[in-house]
Length: 508
Ligand SMILES: Cc1cc2nc3c(=O)[nH]c(=O)nc-3n(C[C@H](O)[C@H](O)[C@H](O)COP(=O)(O)OP(=O)(O)OC[C@H]3O[C@@H](n4cnc5c(N)ncnc54)[C@H](O)[C@@H]3O)c2cc1C
Image 1: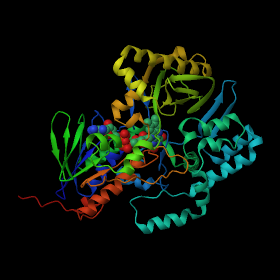
Image 2 (image 1 turned 60 degrees about the vertical axis):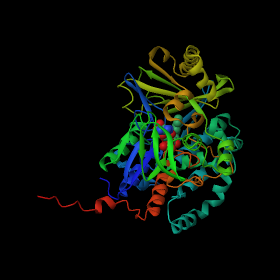
Image 3 (image 1 turned 120 degrees about the vertical axis):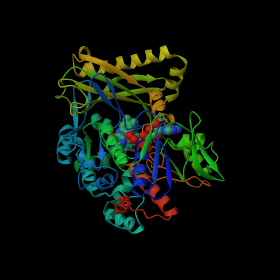
Image 4 (image 1 turned 135 degrees about the vertical axis):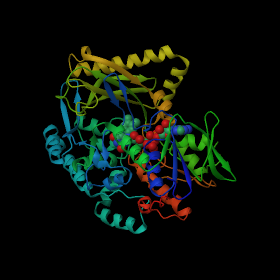
């Protein structure tokens, strides 16, 4: 199926690696994806325990609505319309121990009414917030691989909302929360990494939800990955599992191949790393192709936290519960030395029938931490204490769940705890980060360079190139990378190239 005589090796079978494979195959390249794990997806992952499936990634997918923003870019890499999307009325419910609650609805009119009911004293700030959600519906994502004229057109379209975008990108979620006096409303904006990020991220996400363009697909993130894998197979691409790259081979400052764990060498015309950025630059390439600016970014720029995930298989129908619930706590949970959480968030997957048998429900709870070292050290040096710590965390989380759903403890059939050590083991992500670079107020969402200084025929894609991460960072970084490769090779970036090439006549 190799149609232009050139081969690309892609390191990493997460969403970015897979999307790169599709674009490259469509342009006629021979492609081999090397994935160290035994399945594709990276952070876009779920796992099965008995009859339950526990999702770690997907909350929402921007581009879920046919005709909506980013939908057509997904269509370039897989048939997104094969997925069934759920757009919940209620995104999350914020509650306290006293039983007070606030629903964050996805419909902005309903959201406004609910916020005004809960906090009439914050009416001015609430109206300002819902106005922003409505206004940002007009926002268009800039395609980094687009032509200059498209960028200008995009900018022109976004011009009326520029002042709002600028204002929101300069303040953090926590600063935004200060506009409200109601503790539940404050809690929504200020908790965890949302509080540290630029406020634009949450307001924009709500704007997309209001448009019905940030749905959850049945089957979770692996349903997306499986469809992209099918596209790759249909185009003749190859994904090799249990294939860990140890080194990128370089000759005369040109990437020429990779060395796999076990000693096998693979040669190619281009190497694209869709693996963790830090490992790529400092381990696979020994830090030989890095300038001061890149070094500074990796030393100084803040990352999204890592996390523990407590997953529970509950033998109850919990469909009367919200899909997501955040409980604000009186006494914080001590996750690890240096990490205390004043809230706990649950995802109650009654809306995905593929995750549990009828009448039962998969429930997950994500606990962010930046103390990844504690968990990796404990796992390596003291396995029994590691197990005990996981048990302690599970007990604490189950205690909170029991306080909001009395009797649930007795119905728990399966308990599973993953830690930052699991994230690092299965995805190699630096410090176990869940999404790469966190975009702080004032920082840019602009992609980082996808090349390294002085190294030819090598490119990087994925969340370490696109601050803010997320599944869309896969196609958003893959497309410009393949465009660059095509340009260099004097091949037209034509996504229908294969279909146009007529098969050779068969000799009879
Ligand atoms: C808890 C959580 C919730 C999230 N929620 C959402 C959400 O609701 N919506 C959304 O859009 N995004 C969400 N994300 C973010 C999204 O999952 C990530 O940004 C995205 O999946 C990153 O994809 P990637 O391909 O860049 O990297 P990764 O997924 O990290 O893929 C890298 C791949 O490279 C492989 N690899 C690494 N080193 C090597 C090596 N040496 N040799 C071979 N293979 C290697 C890894 O095994 C991995 O498969 C969430 C993430 C998490 C963790």
